[in-house]
Length: 432
Image 1 (cartoon, helix red, strand yellow):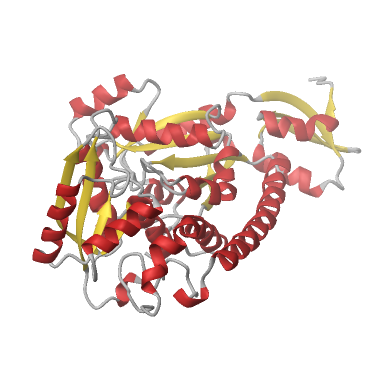
Image 2 (image 1 turned 45 degrees about the vertical axis):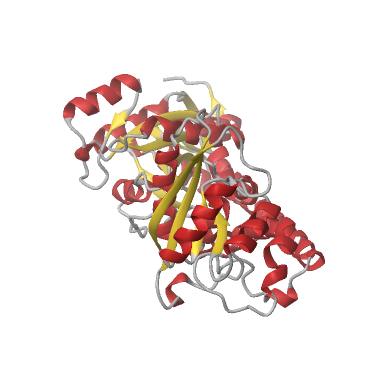
């Protein structure tokens, strides 16, 4: 992987061989992990022509898989006209270089991390998203400059899977010094954007807006759920990592309460560490949430493993203590008995089908319950010249009673904890 031109410009879909190593102690079986890798490859424009599995206690230092399996791989690559081999685990730079030398042209050797980075490169649409992806790509590329590219000088037109690496830069132009310089520039720009995002987040806090974040395994149906709940039209595709850039919409609850709900990037097992680091400003939307809706695909047999993977990422970004509600999405695809079993296994979860619009009333009620859990009833006197605050009272609070006095609006309201902090300076004794 190295140059990042859109996959659709390739003359034909890539033919891929997938390679996995079974070490016998992972949560996911090698077959399950390779099935997911196949979906990733298909998302990035490849047809999987074969999968190879080797059982090893530990990877072989030089080539990851054993000598005999490498020879087998070479034979299959020739006979099946495979032009890309994708390993399910991250290869070291030397392993990748050794394998490319043995397998030979025109077959490329990439790993799961490179594949995911390539997909992110294709799906990022905002300025910040593109910067985040490029930072992750360059962090991956830096230790691989010699092993990955030294034999490719002059071959700047290889396309297909992996071709989005180093957008805008040719092989001859890239060296360690330039990559490090670009990484530093990207980090500065992303830090600047993170500060701006922090200001925007503080503005939402000051305005009393209660925040909900949608998180979940990739392709669990988060964007469809956002559309159903808010009546918006976020683009939905049935593929992995269709959503990279966070999308925030307003959501009206009962009793006039308004909240925001944000769709975020989907998670996956073996999510590259550099992606989590690069997307830290985007993931800040999750850390800043008052409530996390953990959306899972009820029809997926790997549901429990996916939930575990998502919880691991939430812990990694410091969001493990935020209140969570599990949403068992796609319940229209499973039996009622299966739904009941899942609800028993996940106490407090809500069963729903975003595509069919089922269970949404229950979900909205649950969100409203969570939003009102810390409500405070208070009486406030707000001067008439505090127009924005007056507007916030009517938009963010449940107004129990109100009257207009000479000094301003006197109202008894039910406010959530955040809004109560904003109104505290205007609190007065309730005289009935």
